[in-house]
Image (cartoon, rainbow, N blue to C red; front, side, top):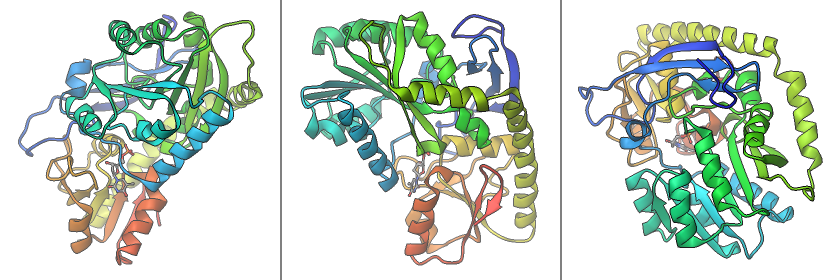
Length: 401
Ligand code: TMP
C-alpha cells in the first residue's frame, strides 16, 4: 500500500483485527453488521500514520450517533481555544467563522456572541438538524472541493475555517485541502484540532484506532501535507482534551507570515520523542493491555461481579472488540446521550442504558471506556451517592481507581 499523503510505500505498524464502524450503534442485538479490518500503517518518508482500509463515507455516517456531549471539561476547553484564537488575533469580532464537522454546533454556539458570523457544515442529517433548530446555521454536506464552491457562493470567504476532530475522518485529505484553499483568501486561517500522534503513542491509546480515524497526525506529517498545497504552519497549541490533542494553525504561504516560536519548539520535541523505539513500545503495550484486561474482566465475571462500561464511545468499541469482550462479560454500557440509550454496541451487543438507570442499579465495576472524561465521570457518580462501584481504567495501562 502507499501513503495517502506523499505516495511513498508504507509498512504495517499494528493490526487490531476486524471491527464494525465504531459509532454505528444497533437498534437490536440481532441486527447484522459487517466488520472491516483495523490496520495501522506508517510511512517512513513523511511520517504519516494512516488506517489502511478506508470505509465509504456514506456507510460510515449512515447510522451516525456521535453527538458532542455536554461536559464541563469540553466547555472549559472551548474557553481555552477561544481565548487562544482571540489573544493572537486569529479571531476578531469581525470574523466570519466556518466550522467543518460542526456536529450539533456546540463550539459555534460558544463563540457566536463574540464574532460576526458562524456557519457549520456537517454530513450527518439528524445531527445537523439539531444544530439548525438551535439557531446555528448548518449545511448538511461533506466538506470537499465541490461543496466549498457552493459555500463560497452562498456565504462568501470565511476569515477562518475550523476543523475540530474531523480532519482525519477523511480518506483523501487533499480533497479537503483543495476545498479549504478555494474558500480562504491569502490572509485566511485554517485551524485543525486533532488527536496528536505523539500522545496516542506515548499513552498507548490504541483504542483511538477506528474507522473514522483514517489519519493519526503528527507535526511532521501535517507539514508534509500542507506543503503540497502551498500552505504552512504559523502556530501550534497543545491541549489535554481527548487524551492529548494538537491545534494546528495553518495558512497559505506568504513571505510576510509571522511564525510563532511554538512551531519550532514542538517540532523539536516531536523529533526527539516520536522515535522507532516509541512505536515499538506502543505496539508491545497494546498487546499487554489486551492480555491484562481480558484476564481481569473474565476473572471478575467468573467471580460473580457485575461490570458495566461507562461511555458508549467509539474507542470503547475498538477496545471491547479487540479484546473480544461482549454482553457475556459486560452487562450494560452507561451513556448520557439520549440518542444512544436503548441501542446496542456494535459486535459486542452490550445494551446502552442511561446514567439514571445505572445509578438506580449500580455495578461492582465500571470499565471506563470514556477515560478522557475520567475525573468528570468519577465525580458525577460519587456525587450521585454511589461510593461502591470501582472504576477500571484501561489506558495508558490497566489500573483500578
Ligand atoms: P467521546 O469520548 O467520543 O467524546 O464520547 C464520550 C461519551 O461519553 C459520550 O457518548 C457521552 C458519554 N459521557 C457520559 O455518559 N457521561 C459523562 O459525564 C460524559 C462527560 C460523557
